Image 1: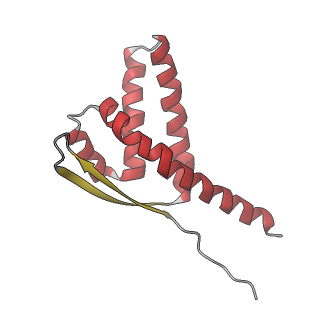
Image 2: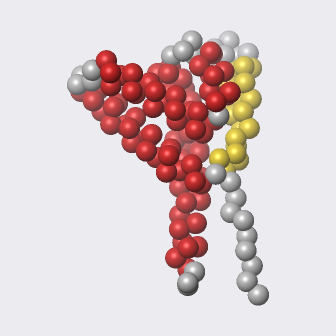
Length: 129
Protein backbone atom coordinates (compact mmCIF):
# COMPACT_ATOMS: atom_id res chain seq x y z
CA UNK A 1 0.00 0.00 0.00
CA UNK A 2 1.28 3.44 -0.92
CA UNK A 3 0.74 6.23 1.57
CA UNK A 4 0.51 9.86 0.58
CA UNK A 5 1.12 12.56 3.10
CA UNK A 6 0.27 16.15 2.33
CA UNK A 7 3.34 18.32 2.78
CA UNK A 8 3.16 20.80 5.62
CA UNK A 9 2.96 24.51 5.05
CA UNK A 10 5.08 26.85 7.11
CA UNK A 11 3.14 28.21 10.05
CA UNK A 12 4.41 30.93 12.29
CA UNK A 13 3.45 33.92 14.36
CA UNK A 14 4.82 37.42 14.33
CA UNK A 15 4.01 40.11 16.85
CA UNK A 16 4.74 43.75 16.10
CA UNK A 17 5.28 46.19 18.94
CA UNK A 18 5.74 49.92 18.60
CA UNK A 19 8.92 51.50 19.97
CA UNK A 20 7.18 52.11 23.32
CA UNK A 21 6.06 48.46 23.58
CA UNK A 22 2.43 48.84 22.52
CA UNK A 23 1.15 45.84 20.57
CA UNK A 24 0.28 46.94 17.06
CA UNK A 25 -0.19 43.71 15.14
CA UNK A 26 -0.35 39.93 15.58
CA UNK A 27 0.21 37.99 12.39
CA UNK A 28 -0.46 34.27 12.00
CA UNK A 29 1.36 33.07 8.91
CA UNK A 30 0.70 30.15 6.64
CA UNK A 31 3.16 30.06 3.76
CA UNK A 32 3.24 27.35 1.13
CA UNK A 33 6.45 26.10 -0.54
CA UNK A 34 5.27 27.25 -3.97
CA UNK A 35 5.87 30.83 -2.81
CA UNK A 36 9.58 30.04 -2.48
CA UNK A 37 10.40 30.77 -6.13
CA UNK A 38 8.68 34.16 -6.07
CA UNK A 39 10.23 35.05 -2.73
CA UNK A 40 13.69 33.99 -3.91
CA UNK A 41 13.48 36.19 -7.00
CA UNK A 42 12.52 39.18 -4.87
CA UNK A 43 15.34 38.38 -2.43
CA UNK A 44 17.90 38.34 -5.26
CA UNK A 45 16.57 41.67 -6.57
CA UNK A 46 16.87 43.20 -3.11
CA UNK A 47 20.42 41.92 -2.61
CA UNK A 48 21.55 43.21 -6.01
CA UNK A 49 20.07 46.65 -5.40
CA UNK A 50 21.55 46.76 -1.88
CA UNK A 51 25.02 46.03 -3.26
CA UNK A 52 24.66 48.89 -5.74
CA UNK A 53 23.48 51.21 -2.96
CA UNK A 54 26.46 50.32 -0.75
CA UNK A 55 28.83 51.14 -3.60
CA UNK A 56 27.02 54.42 -4.23
CA UNK A 57 26.06 53.25 -7.72
CA UNK A 58 22.31 53.41 -7.32
CA UNK A 59 20.08 55.89 -9.09
CA UNK A 60 16.70 57.18 -7.89
CA UNK A 61 14.76 54.77 -10.12
CA UNK A 62 16.69 51.80 -8.70
CA UNK A 63 16.17 53.08 -5.16
CA UNK A 64 12.43 53.09 -5.84
CA UNK A 65 12.71 49.54 -7.25
CA UNK A 66 14.42 48.51 -4.01
CA UNK A 67 11.53 49.90 -1.95
CA UNK A 68 8.99 48.15 -4.19
CA UNK A 69 10.86 44.82 -3.97
CA UNK A 70 10.87 45.08 -0.17
CA UNK A 71 7.16 45.82 -0.01
CA UNK A 72 6.38 43.10 -2.59
CA UNK A 73 8.27 40.56 -0.46
CA UNK A 74 6.21 41.47 2.57
CA UNK A 75 2.98 41.38 0.56
CA UNK A 76 3.85 37.93 -0.77
CA UNK A 77 4.80 36.42 2.59
CA UNK A 78 2.69 38.39 5.09
CA UNK A 79 -0.33 39.35 2.99
CA UNK A 80 -1.61 42.70 1.77
CA UNK A 81 -3.54 43.68 4.88
CA UNK A 82 -0.67 42.96 7.27
CA UNK A 83 1.79 44.75 4.98
CA UNK A 84 -0.47 47.82 4.89
CA UNK A 85 -0.51 47.87 8.69
CA UNK A 86 3.29 47.52 8.77
CA UNK A 87 3.62 50.40 6.31
CA UNK A 88 1.43 52.55 8.57
CA UNK A 89 3.53 51.68 11.62
CA UNK A 90 6.73 52.49 9.73
CA UNK A 91 5.29 55.71 8.25
CA UNK A 92 5.52 54.41 4.67
CA UNK A 93 9.27 53.78 5.14
CA UNK A 94 10.13 50.41 3.54
CA UNK A 95 13.80 50.68 4.59
CA UNK A 96 12.90 50.87 8.29
CA UNK A 97 10.38 48.07 7.92
CA UNK A 98 12.97 45.97 6.09
CA UNK A 99 15.59 46.51 8.81
CA UNK A 100 13.26 45.34 11.57
CA UNK A 101 11.15 42.64 9.91
CA UNK A 102 13.39 41.11 7.23
CA UNK A 103 15.59 39.21 9.73
CA UNK A 104 12.48 37.21 10.69
CA UNK A 105 11.86 36.39 7.05
CA UNK A 106 15.51 35.51 6.42
CA UNK A 107 16.18 33.58 9.65
CA UNK A 108 12.84 31.82 10.18
CA UNK A 109 10.63 31.75 7.09
CA UNK A 110 13.28 31.31 4.39
CA UNK A 111 14.99 28.25 5.97
CA UNK A 112 11.61 26.59 6.52
CA UNK A 113 10.58 27.20 2.91
CA UNK A 114 13.95 25.99 1.61
CA UNK A 115 13.67 22.80 3.65
CA UNK A 116 10.13 22.20 2.38
CA UNK A 117 11.21 22.75 -1.23
CA UNK A 118 14.13 20.31 -0.84
CA UNK A 119 11.84 17.70 0.70
CA UNK A 120 9.39 18.12 -2.16
CA UNK A 121 12.18 17.85 -4.77
CA UNK A 122 13.52 14.69 -3.10
CA UNK A 123 10.05 13.17 -3.09
CA UNK A 124 9.69 13.82 -6.83
CA UNK A 125 13.11 12.28 -7.52
CA UNK A 126 12.22 9.11 -5.62
CA UNK A 127 9.11 8.55 -7.69
CA UNK A 128 9.48 6.39 -10.77
CA UNK A 129 7.15 7.29 -13.57
